[in-house]
Image (cartoon, rainbow, N blue to C red; front, side, top):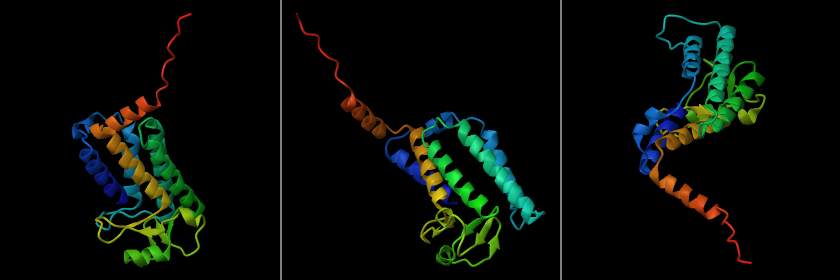
Length: 197
């Protein structure tokens, strides 16, 4: 849910800078089926309590890892979009933490306490005081005043920043474009004027 906040912030920032929301419809996303398939696998692996099925723990972990493979493939297909390489780095950070901890994303007890939650295992999240690659696990909690709060990791931060950059760049804000044009003019190498012999 941290990503929803990043997308909303990207929209607000892009519009504040003079972006056109209609440009989002022209965002040249490729292989979007990979992203939808990844989300579908995650819904199957970790169904909401109201859904009429359950998945064994090992199978759920395998499906979750497969969803990450699809997300990374989707990110690679869209690697030329501004911001997507940042998101890809975040995906790899999260995947490294998950693989190092046997298919679950550990969450530090301090992050759980800050979020006001207490559990040993919840879907793909597992409470762990001393996880492997501790600097990549869920270690912070979203402030309570923010909507859709949850715990999050370094990888989540990178994915959120990347999503924000994708949205802002897609809106093509006029203010940002003017800054970039001035920067290009300032760094342009002046052409040498030929001297008369």
